[in-house]
Image (cartoon, rainbow, N blue to C red; front, side, top):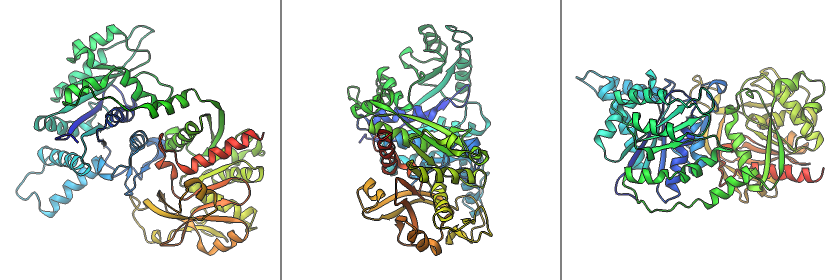
Length: 537
């Protein structure tokens, strides 16, 4: 462990969507590969306390940590790259900050003071960052600043970062920027120059500049950025288009970004990175040995793929583990309601997956997909809502409970096989009130899920309000549904399976703990079944 914590601040300029989370994760990976403890944090400027009440179509998926904190999807990227579980303290939002300041003011902690952005709010920001470094015993804390330089929402946070730099040694600023091309070979660095001057006007000097562009950064553009942005030429790095996001650490490693970081942060310059396992898995993604497995994801947010990013990445991890290619098709569940022949839309897939979600739109289409998988022997994996709908489909079409449903979709259903959790019946507020975070699950020996995990007790993350109605458990089991995982403390069914064929579903979001170097066991078992089914075609 280093004698004191270092800090890396990553901010984006010119435009949003440049991939700060991937850059942050890649740099953290290179530090971790050299034996350093690197902990990422993120600031999001929105005034929501967390992103739990935000629409996935606008904001991407809601990622959940072990402690139940609902966070931005970038935290999924951090964990997938670093193979670690992060605490909720690593997520800072505008809503959390202002809520804390106002609560402190009401308690009288600022008596006699004018409560202002500086110093009260900026001190709170710095305090949280330093606490994460101390609690985690981190060698390096990486702080991703959400939004774009110049946004009103993150101005006070950048001011706190300026203060952090003046108060502590070994603070590095990285600017991620965009270099457009008006035509092939005509790259323009002027927007980056202006963005750099804006940062400088805030008292921040970029130590490293990383560029995104339509074509590889040319030597002339690199020299211009160095000259006009006041950075050394060897501190300008290229973030090019990649076949997979997991390739970026290897690309930055080839450009020797660590040498620059080592110089700026006073790290050991000759420390070699252990990236052999990472390289092996990345190569399997880029050039897999076996033909692609074709997987259909049947969802209601398919217009925005980031709504299901953890599901997609968990499939990528398992495909890499099996050294298989992967072809994902996004099937809109509404289409499966409107089609008279579901088989036309679902035939030819080696596996069908129904992810989580809320609301009644597209529900019957998902149930149609599950029935198709069961009746045609197609491997099926259900996640959260995908488990609840698997139970509904089984109740209707195997148990004979016509019209069985969830009380989420039909409060007057005759057979409420899925009902509101007991703890949710008196909840009035929406934010942070789901069943959230990691809970233990006891697995049934001899089941498919037990074979997947190879142990009796596992811990997975949850985000839901409804559960299998205990009044119907016996009826479901008598008809052949296997309840193979339970939360013993409250006798909640967590995992179910079909007795025949491969059909398995989990109430927890098992995709959230899948990592490239450690794929989610249920996803891996699902992909093995898909691969086996393909061989039998």
